[in-house]
Amino acid sequence: MQYDCICSSSFKKALPRFNKGLMIGHIAKHELRRHVRNGRVRTLLYVTIVMLVASLILSFRDYRVANDQYMANLSAARANWESQSEKDPHDAAHDGTYVIKPIYPLAMIDKGINQFSGQVVHLGAHERKQSTLNEAKDNSGMFRFGELTPGFILTYLVPLLLIFLGYNTFTEEKEKQTIRLLLVQGVSLSKLAVGKWLALFLQMIVLWILLFAGAFIISQSVGSSILVSVSEWLALGGIYLFYFVIFINLIVWVSAKASTSGVSLTTLLTIWIIITLIIPKVSTNLAGWSHPFPTLQTFRDNINEDQANGLNGHNFWNEAAQDFKQKVLDQYGVETVEDLPIAYGGLLLAEGEKYESEIYTKHFDLLQSQYEKQRTIYRWCGILSPMLSVKFFSMAIARTDYGFLWHFEDEAEKYRVAFNTTLNMNIAENAKGVDQYTAGRELWSTIPRFDYAWQPSQSILNNHLVEFASIFLWAGLSFLLAIFFSRKIKVI
Image 1 (cartoon, one colour):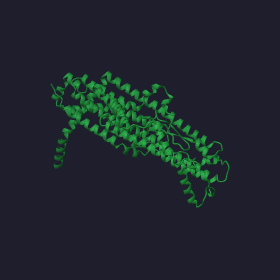
Image 2: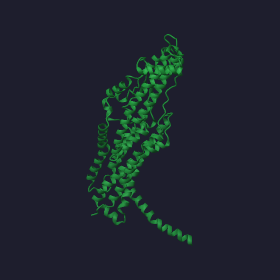
Image 3: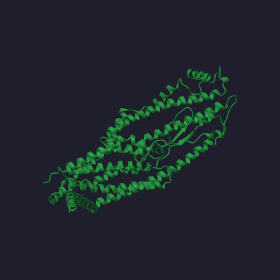
Image 4: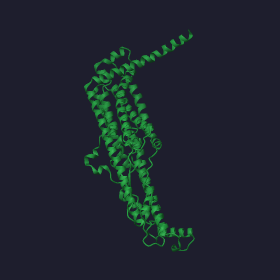
């Protein structure tokens, strides 16, 4: 008997919560039915779904073509290196070889700067080069207006779709005076707001699942050796999910506050323009003005100035070369270069390569430092535009941002130094007393292939915690704002 009383008491306490949830569900169901019956809404949904599917197909095609080209070019570059004729190893270093930037599967969703950044880096002697050969140069000027990609649809079109779906969420009830009938029937304004919010969320989640499930399935069918972790898929999908939630919150808030549907739509479109277009453009100008990059000429002049009095491998007589020579003589305990058991020229070339690489690393690090300062500006602007936070993280996790580009070029530079050191040390070890020393395929094939190690996903996630915090803050505050103003609706 006591047990029955306890169960009855618990049920009575849970009943209001159950009824509240049931009422919210009925409101959401009614909103969904209303949207489905609306020809304008159906057309928008169908067009968006078609564009999503088309963007996935196009992205899959582009990724597969690019991946096939990458593998073919990688093999060709290695074959050209190993099949070259016999020559002085330092001449081979000047001819150099090429490394090619790989493509991460998540680039199918967000291409980032891939179309405008270089894809190939030439590795030669004495000089660090930036990547060249970008896709944009091989296309017409119209290419710069952008492509139809999943990233474009997620960032710009889905929020726009949500606006057209929900701009009259509350204003239609006000204009038709049906909101009074709902209140008379016991529906509170907060329940009404949550139910309408839920209806928009469910429509959005269908598009979200469609795109990310399609992208996941396609990425598995490519046959790539690169495995995208579950945490990366969840992080990328999650940040876009919160991005859409922010827009849903703003839609409910504006619709609750606006007097008419026309005012609501105009206000929401203005917010969309500010978030996706104006603030990103302003932040770009502000970052470039606050922390400008040096011109290419200034960049090269600064490097040449640092190299002027240092080791370069070909100058035997400047002060740096003399100091190095004395160091080598002391190391081997001899009086002259001729007494060395190895070819001094090879040692000087190897040491000069390391010295010059340190100079290039110093100046490239200064460029990266300047970019990090610009990124701080973007982060602050992310307080006003969640699109910036989403875009920076999306590109980072897809390995299509400047962070990936510089990481790749830094790894290529480490390989270039090791590559040239092997060739120059071969001269030092084998050219002593030999006129016009040459090497052949046996040496070329001993140099290992360039094997790029991808940035760890955990490192990327940790480096973008600020972006995540910004998005969560936007989502939380905008939701509270929507619920608060929906309870303040004046019913006349």
